[in-house]
Amino acid sequence: MRTGETDPSAQNDTDAGSQEWTDQVLLATCPEKMSFFFKYLLAFTPIILVFVCILARYLLDIGISTFSTVAENAISNPTAGSAGGTALLTPGLMSGLGPAITGLSPAVSYGTNVAILMIAPVGIFVIIAVIGWSMRVAEVWTGVALTLALSGVVGLLLVLMTGGAIDAQERVIVYLKWIAFLVQPFSVVATIISLVWLEKFRQSIQYTLTEAGVTVRGGVWQIQKHVFPYSDIGSVVMEQNLLGTRYNFGTVIPVSNTRWGEETSLRGFGAEARRGVLAVA
Image (tube, rainbow, N blue to C red; front, top):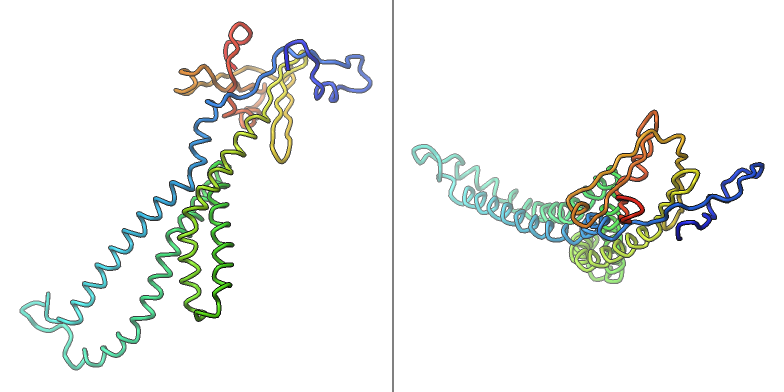
């Protein structure tokens, strides 16, 4: 849209009883790609979490292996570490505890495997998705939730396809192992989908300065429109981060006369500077 054209959306919003049927566009612009740089980086959160899960699994395996080794040594050599070589556990007590420990060993091993797989990746992905959702950072929680959802659904289908070959208890371990494996390829798929969605969202945002006020439109699945009449704007705040000062973009925040209500609508949507028309946008 060029300066001097009529904004159809502004024209539709004009009161039917008013004689002013058109609203001349003074400036129309949209966000630059560089203004979405950090949003693009946040879209890679699922891939980053995969490496975090691999590291967490490695550390948990080392910790549990070390604990198991210490426990086995204590059982096999009960006098080790006791003061003066006095046995902490008598041979009679050890002979009585032996069968109980042997019987509990499979259950402990099963519970340990489930706990590790529930922490990495399921627990880590769920925690980051909840944090991203609570902070309303869609670039974080959408990709993470999509990765976990795809991995869970496909993993469940794979377990059901081989359900007759394993018992019910073993299915839980197999299902969690499938999730741990599938998050790796699906994290890439979710990242690509997030990047495509972000780009479409960036292209959908339109800033329009008309004779009546400022109009902001945007949205992929649901179009939102914010109109700020000049009479309601008390001041204008301009913000530029390090990249903005380097590549000439920033965020313009129209401030209401009574509150900062417009800030949440425009923050983060930087626009390209048009030299000679507007200092920064």
